[in-house]
Amino acid sequence: MIEDEKYIARAVAEVLKKSHYTVDLAYDGEYGLECSTMEIYDAVILDIMLPKRDGLSVLREMRKQGIKTPVLLLTARGEVEDRVQGLDLGADDYLAKPFHTDELLARLRAICRRKVNEDYDGLISFSDIKLSPHTLMLKYDGGEVSLTLKETQILEILMNNVNRIVTKGSIIEKVWGYDTDVEDNHVESHISLLRKKMSGAGTAARIRTIRGAGYTLISGEDGS
Ligand code: CA
Image (cartoon, rainbow, N blue to C red; front, top):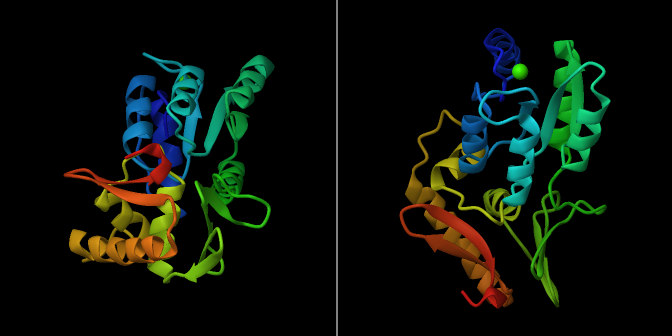
C-alpha cells in the first residue's frame, strides 16, 4: 500500500492483516515505486496524491518497466480526470476516498482474481508455452505435459513476472507461505524437475538462473 496519510495507511493495513493479507507500507511515491519493482505483490493499493512522486507517475513507471501487478488506485472524490488517466495508464480499478473498508476488500479480491496474461480459457501464455493452472498442464506446440502442483505454482509466478528476476525467497513465500521451513534447495529441485519437463518438450521458453539473485523466464529466441 502506497499512501502518505499514515493513519489511513495503518488503519487499512490492520483491516487487510485481519483478512490474512500481508502488507508492506510505503509513505511516498519513490519508495513505493522501489517496493513495487523489487518485490512481487498480488496487488498494489496506490494513492494519487503522494510526496516525492505522485501515484500516476508511479503507475506509469511500473507499467513502463513491464510490471503488471494489479493496481487499485485511490482517488479524491470528484477527480474524474485522475480516474480516467489512471485507467488509461493501466490501473485495474479505482476507489474514491473516503471509502468503506468492505468495498476496498471487495475490489481488492476482484483485481487479485484477474490474472495477468490469462486468456478466456484460463490459460497463461508466454513464448511458445501455455500453462493451465487449473488442470496442472503445460501446453506447447505439439503436445502437453502434466506438472505437479508446486511446479505449476512456480511456473505461474515466473510467467506472471517475465520481465523480472524472481527470487527464491519470493517463490517460497508465494508457494509455501510465510511460516515454512522450506529452504532454497527445495525450490532448486522443483525448478530442476520443471526444466527437465520443459526441455523434454522442446519448448523455446526456458528458466534462466541469475546467479545470486533468482530466476527469470526467457524465450530461447532471445538468443540467451
Ligand atoms: Ca495522499
